Length: 178
Image (cartoon, rainbow, N blue to C red; front, top):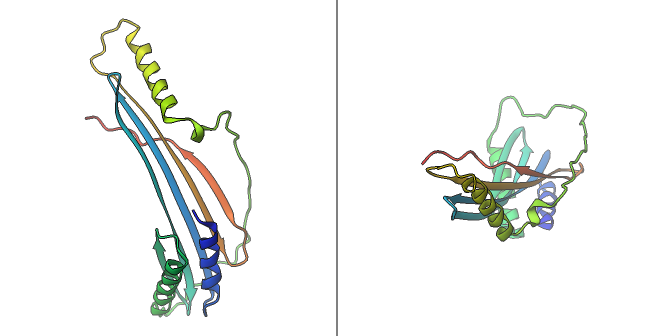
């Protein structure tokens, strides 16, 4: 996630003849390991990121997004969102509610930073789990262990409002039977 491009996008959008602009930057890092019968079957590591701009102009709303983190791309998506908002030509103009914002801040500190654990250590942990199962002397036809983590980070910024930055560790999706 490039904070400078997100900030530039908002500043560029606000320089247009619009009523409201909002930029949302988003990044997801996902890692998953699967061990079947004591053998590492899969290791996947991905990063998906991008940003979008939402614009309210002439009573309509427009949205455009991209995964290209450049100022040129920011100008393009602002132009698209402005065009969509102005094309909407609604009879009943869109307006946001005048609600007071509620702010809350909390965190749960990690005892050990999960994101910093090496893939080798994760594989060793799965191997130890597999050995613990097989050491019990019970005949298990098939064993499968999965370890998956998703780290989501996003930021939303609108006009002069505060920038929010959130991180979330998600649990892996349940694995389906083969």
